[in-house]
Length: 86
Image (cartoon, rainbow, N blue to C red; front, side, top):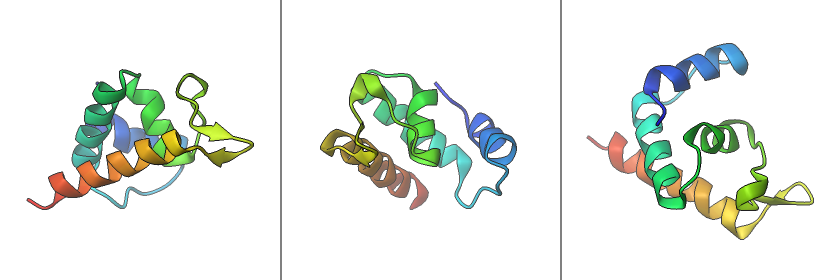
C-alpha cells in the first residue's frame, strides 16, 4: 500500500514537480487498482505518473500502451474521480 504522503514526496522529489491532484485520493485509487490487478502499488504509481512500463503486466509494447496498460491507467483515473467527488 502506498500513502498520500509517499505519492506527494515522489512527485516533488523524484519528478521535481508540484502535485496538481489530491495525493491522498490518488494513493487510494492506486491502491485499489493495485489490489485488483494483484501488483505492487509503487510500480502502478510509476506507470501512472511517469509512464514507466511494467513488464510483468505487459503495459507497453514498442513504447506504446497496450490494452492492459490503458485499462490500468483508466481504472486509476476513474477511481480517483470517484474519490475526489466528495
